[in-house]
Every structure is written in structure tokens, then in C-alpha cells.
Length: 169
Image (tube, rainbow, N blue to C red; front, side, top):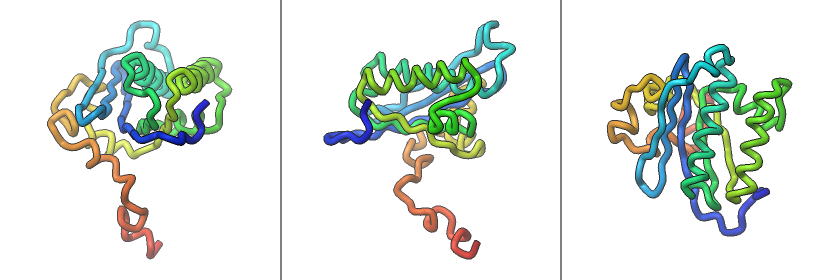
């Protein structure tokens, strides 16, 4: 499993969201926005929102892996679901279904030699970025209307640059 690559030169960014009956994800590859969206089938109707959120992220990453978009890269996938992020970093879940999805992510990392980072972001950022809208079939928000993916991924800013009020706090 790739822990820290010696020659990793590419970082990719994406967002994934599942809400109600739908799901959506968008990611950046070589300057182009790629995306997927749809509605869940009957087998997911009674599933928890945490399961739907994590399954959407796993399905998105598996699609990316199958298209070669993850080979040897560090992939930062943002979600507004803190349970998915927490389970990913703790390495487990008491839910057998969530645990199986976590194992699928670790296996994917080994197969395509990538490093996956699930990052929590606010729901308002998810809405602005557009993946929240994708989960409802809306293709005209955020990155889908041409706003740069980097606008929603301010990882280059330190905490005080992102929120000056933090220093007083």
C-alpha cells in the first residue's frame, strides 16, 4: 500500500455527495471536470445516509480507478459526511456494510498505487461546488458552470488566511 510516494507528482481533487434518492460526484483530471450522477435503485432505499454517502465515494473512486485516473496519484475527495471521513481514517466501522466499503477503498489504493484522502467539508461548500446539485440532477452549479475546482479547494491557504477571525478565537 502506498503510504508516501517517492515520485508522486499529481494530486487530484473531487467532491462527492449523496442526498435522498440521488448521488453525484465531480473531479478534476488534467484540467477537465469529470462527473457522475444518478439515483439509487430500490436496494438502497432503506439504507442509511452514511452508507449512501460512503458508497457514492467508493463507486466514484472505483470508476476513476478503472479509467486510469488514480494511477500513482494522491486523490483528495471531499465529502460533507463526517462519518465517512471518520470511518476511513479509523480503519473500521461497527457496520459490516460500511466496513466492506472501507476495505474496498484500501484494496483500490493497493491495486492502482494511489493514496486516497477523504476530507470533510461543510455542506455549504458542497452546495457552492456543485456536487450537492449533481445528486439532485442539477448540472448548472459550481464547477459544472465553469468555476475552477481550485476555487473550492483552498488547501494552499493556511488557517489564518482562510479565516482571520480564528486568531482572536
